Length: 516
Image (cartoon, rainbow, N blue to C red):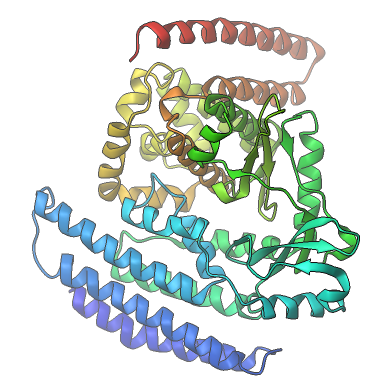
């Protein structure tokens, strides 16, 4: 049955997709003469990779009957996942652009996808394929109407970093100011429509072959967000907005934008240097307090998600630099790459905050109520709560505030994920779309905590609880119908903060004297 499905998909689907793709190439207005052949090569790679992945799974897993609980099955399945993840990585590196963007998203979904895919694709967070500097100069000249030599006295040909849609080079303006120049890959603007079409086609084809593979939500999110990320003017405005929102965070810095040299495809920013936030060697050498750093990040992102609703949604390690010079009292955190932000509505933040508070209180009725409010089917609320927290259900019922995360817990979670893929994808298909970028942000912050070895310290737990209470109070007070109700809510809020303070003292005592 599986083989017949694959053959039908290839015969009627993949060939049809190639034909449609080629027709699209023929109708796109092109700036580069060789773009037609470039697009066809990219399409061919995608087709071949999709077929190879299907054949690999068919040969290794679906062509024989397995005892799904046997050790041999788990070993073969892990091997199949690894082989196919490496094929997908090769495709992303070769086709670049949107393919790398999707690969990076996969690399952030620690608790939602097989570990082989997550760990393999994570390399794209710091090792995306670069373009030749000649192509960079071409984009600068087209957008700024000047040769790079007229703008910069020095321009380093090797990029500081390469992302899915652009790469960054160090340069000097004519007045000697050191800057970072972010330039969009030359092929992205022309290829974006076709890439999105083909990515959606492949995912739909794979969902026919593998019923558990339902990733339309990823296509929808990429389509929605890609236009924002392609506009560097919007990225500059995002940077200035977040700098203003968190101006009282003296340890947080956002690079200044040089607007006179910036366009939709070229962004010139203040140059900053430091170590990546997960660079343990840099942290040790510069005597940075890892716990303090962890708390700062937890505070920043909890405020973004629960209070301000303006969330930096790509916090992978390459986008968060840290620096501490010998004369500095505390670490400075530089927040980079402001192309993608989630703007959360008041209603979403209220429901999400209430969900977190119900999890902390172990109130199963409210967990279900607010999961449903976020779009989850009632029978899947427990799984959704596990996805939100990244903790097993047994731990949630015991109390996440008094049970430290552990490597064994994470291994147990990831071991169960393959059995639950069908239900996880159902949650991702129906959940309020605002939650998807929040999930991505949470997973990346968790990965930083693990890299620093601080996952068991629960750095941000109390901050999240406090921010949830602030969010709930603000929403209920704003929607209160009378002054008396607002005064009651104010007293209730003050009481909650007082109880939270004493609870924090209790937790510190508990973890110091009773746990590990």
